Length: 62
Image (cartoon, rainbow, N blue to C red; front, side, top):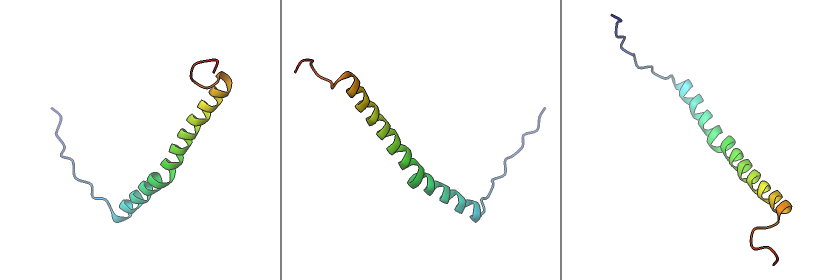
C-alpha cells in the first residue's frame, strides 16, 4: 500500500513575491491593454473592410 505524503507549505521568499508582483503589473498595465486595443482595432478594421466590399448594412437602394 502506498504511503500518504503530507505536503509541506512552501514559503515564498520576498524576492519571488516581488518578481511575481512585477510580472502582474507588466501584464495588467502593459501587455493586456495592448492586446485589447489590438483586438478591438482588428475587429473594427474587419468590419470596415467588409463594409467597403459588401456595402453598409440596411435596406438596399436608399
